[in-house]
Length: 493
Length: 134
Image 1 (tube, rainbow over the protein chains, first blue to last red):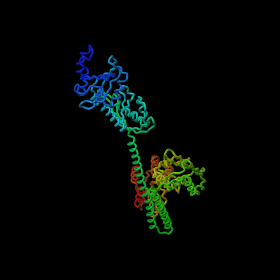
Image 2: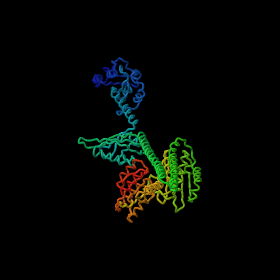
Image 3: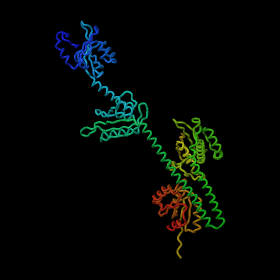
């Protein structure tokens, strides 16, 4: 049954019927009171049916054609107040051959003598809706990809070269909640100070010389998160080749960058260790050679001299060389031992009793120069360390301070610990003769480096101390002023 | 008879007392024509050089060790370069060391004031040559 049968339309509108029936649009009408339904020819055609192929009634309309999932939405719409501004509904109807398809229907209400009517148009929007859904889906996929890659887009606003347009992902990286507009300056200020001029220069070069850039910068986000970002940009140029704006991407490369930095650190450490190892080999060779050279020298002289007196003198030197050789080899052993002992298990070392023991072992040396030795381990009483190392470190530093005390004043030696973040520090301070670091610098940790004309200086203690500290991943640093004193700062872990 | 040459004035700058003792002994046994003075580190030698310059008593030869406390051989060369323009005499400086570190050898060769690099222990022929070159 067609919607507008002849005679059913009243008066002037009759001539519209064929027109309406020829439209590629369907018209439907529903009477709330009688539950009567009417459809135009286009309605049938749109759904793929011949006119009268299906029963035109409320049951067919609501239970058969309209997608059940859209029913509540549709009922809701027709039961509410409907005005000219009421938006069209998008609904799914079952077609004869193509399953459910999307249709758009604009609805109106009318009250007349026949009852309360609601009527509407019907247009197939399936293609458009599919594209829409697909593009929304693409958008979600893109957003997901950008989100997963932690990648965002930034652009200097071509309208206003001092402001920056950022994509949502960039705001997320910057921990900025509301998407406020940033000036170039504000944008740059989110990066750590050393990187600000780098970015500013890069932008300037792009604007002035149309030069693209690709740099890695450290960001401090609004929530104080430190993040390594890769900032890339290309110039946008006009037909004259002049840069009109700058466009690019920002990517979170934090974990890769940190791994790289760690790797670089390891390489530096290895290079350093290698250099020291080679240095060690040269030193060992030098020291062994100087003893064996002297030994050869003395043996030759011994053969060339005749008097008993001279021979006795030369022999006494040979004995000295023998002792020195023994000592040198002992030192080498000690250094090699650092490497073998590192495999030993760390134990909890209580610092106070260990330091007290060392002080009593060096009691004579302390009393001879009337040194005042203070210690304070209240900030950090114990540490997981290789006990033999800790003992050696404390003993070497104490011996060092006692050895280089200032003759004009009572020696005061302070030893204390503190923690900072995850690190434990040990400080060793004295008011001794000090050392000119401008002149000797890091050499004081070198092997067989002695700086004062002290006969008991062997130049081995601090070399071993540094090796032990570094073997366990720590570091040692020295501050000193001649005639004032020396301070060793040791990061144990 | 050939006229006797005046003995070479030789300074040893070295903290190794046994080596210095041996060198002195060897020179006296071999009756090498030289007169020896000994300084235990670079600083003492620089101080003595400044004084000797005033007294017109500069050495002909300096046998210089590298590894010494207080002032090592390199620092000595650095200081020597500063006072050299004020000295009117050619002083032959030999670096004498047990170090076979190539870095040390190249470094020595790159200092124009250094005549040569000798390895310890020095052989008698080398010593003769050093004194004959004066």
